[in-house]
Amino acid sequence: MLQFIQCTEQNDQNVRDELLAGLSAAQPFTSPKYLYDALGSKLFEAICELPEYYPTRTEALIFRSHASAIAQAVGSGSTLIDLGAGNCAKAARLFPVLQPVQYVPVDISVNFLRDALQRLQQQFPSIVMTGIGMDFSHELLLPDSVREAKRLFFYPGSSIGNYTPDEALLFLQRIRAACDDDGGLLIGVDLVKDKAILDAAYDDALGVTAAFNLNLLRHLNHLLGTDFDVQAWRHRGFFNAQESRIEMHLEAVSALTVRWPQGERHFERGARIHTENSYKYTQRSFTDLLEQAGFGRLSFWADPQQWFMVCHAHVN
Ligand code: AVJ
Image (cartoon, rainbow, N blue to C red; front, side, top):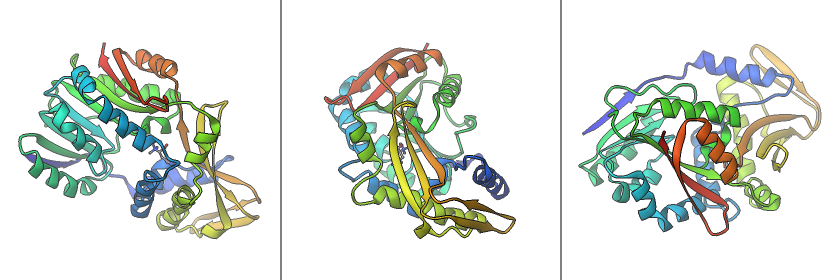
C-alpha cells in the first residue's frame, strides 16, 4: 500500500517575511533550510562524496558494521518514521535488518518523495509506505494513517546539529510526545573532534561547500527578488570551539548594497550573513540531552576514530 499526504504547505508570503526579517537583523542570518533548492540539494549530495566530508561515509560505515546490534536494540515490526527522508536511500538500506511494518518518509515536499517511494514500494511490496509532505521543524503532528504502535523515529546525518542545543531539546521532546510507550529514536550525531578536521569538512579544497553556501544567494534572488551578486561574496566555514559548532557565513568581499522590491541593505566589506550552524556533541553532552528529553535505555555505536555516532533511545 502506497499513500502520499501533504500536511503543511510553505506559504510564499511567510517565507519572504521570515527571510527578510533575518536579512534585516543587526546580525543578518538565514535558516539553513534555504540552502536546499534543486541545485543546493545536488551540491549537498556532492559534498557527501568529498574526502573531507566524513559524516555521511562514517555514519554509513557505522550502520554497516553494527547492523545486527542496531537491529537488536530497535526490534523489528516498527513504524519507521524517516525525518528529512530525501531520496529515502539511508532508510532503505536498513529495511532488510529493521524489517519495518510501515515506512513513513517525511520531507518538506511530498513531490520530492514521490519517485523514490514508488520505486521502493516495488522493491519492498510488504511494507506499507506513507509519504508525508511536512515541515517538521516547528511541529510534529502525524496523520491518522501513521500507525501509533512501535514508532521508530529515524533522524540520520547529524541533521540535529542544525538546531541549537535548546531547540534540539524541544525537538527531541516533540518526538518523544509523538511516541507511544514502545516508541524510540535512531539518530546520527556528529562528534567534537580536532578543529583542523572539522574546518576542512566545511571548507573543502574543491570549493564544493563554498558553492553550496553561495548558491543560497541565487535561491534568495529567486525567492525575494534580491539582486545578490554571487561574485561579491565569499564562503566562510569554521569550527567555533567555544560554541561547539561549525558556523557557515557568507562574507561581503567589498562594501556593497543589496536591493529588493521593498527595501535594501548596505553591507560593509567583511560583513557576514550567518547561514548555518552545525553543532557537534560528545557522547556525554548528547546523553544529557536525550535524558532531559525523556529518553532512556540508550545505546551508542561509533566508528573506531570516534568521529560520528549513532544512538538508539527508548521512550522512558
Ligand atoms: C545536513 C545539516 C547535517 O551540518 O554537516 C554540510 C549540512 N553544511 N556542509 C552538516 C552541511 C555544509 C549538514 N547537515
